[in-house]
Image (cartoon, rainbow, N blue to C red):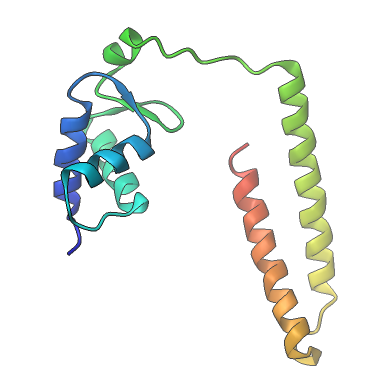
Length: 141
């Protein structure tokens, strides 16, 4: 049997009632521990988004949540500023991903899908999936 969004939200509110800070994995573990129904990480995420909208919890930073900002401050979350080296690495990765994506795009423009064997067609599909994964990675920067 699957757990409902309402049940997940109630459990997450119970979890944050102690005024600590939590991640999605913490919520998932808590819900699994206090409920025997099937739950997925995606359901937890949707419940968290809903609780943020209703201001039952707040997002402190990406992937970190608390009951409110005051409780987060009490737990002294320290956000470490990125160093210049980290910024350069991120820029280099982003630039590399852009180049790879452009190269894949150019390759795909040259392919006539009707002339492909099954094996080559499967490779083209995997290239399209790779482009999607690259876009997902780039969206995190």
